[in-house]
Length: 144
Ligand SMILES: [Fe+2]
Ligand SMILES: [Fe+2]
Image (cartoon, rainbow, N blue to C red):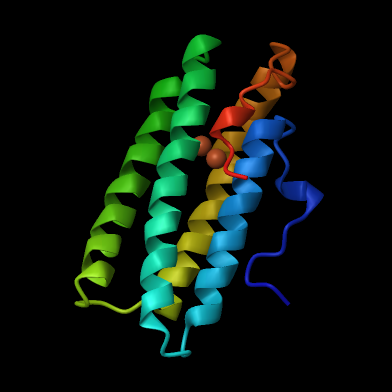
């Protein structure tokens, strides 16, 4: 069983966002697999990927919110900024070898992922669907 099990309940119904969320879940699952494996090189690479993907993903959401005059833009962006700050700090510590990826860290990523989608991203998704932007092609921001 995966650390993060993807399900329709996580969908926000904006394809570009759902695809990015799925990619993030894949990285988190791969990172979880490195726990206790002693493969620090792989853990470091995945941490780096995670932070990069998260930033691209937040940018995608923020562009969509801004372009569609979403009223909760600032509070949503604040949540993103807080998470990026925390993830970057952890990543720096991991890259320098001061810290190893651990279960506590993974659990906090997982909680954040579920809570943020549930509380913030779904509301934004509903709004974007109403605005009719769900099918817009912003696919260039999705890593293949
Ligand atoms: Fe978000
Ligand atoms: Fe998101």
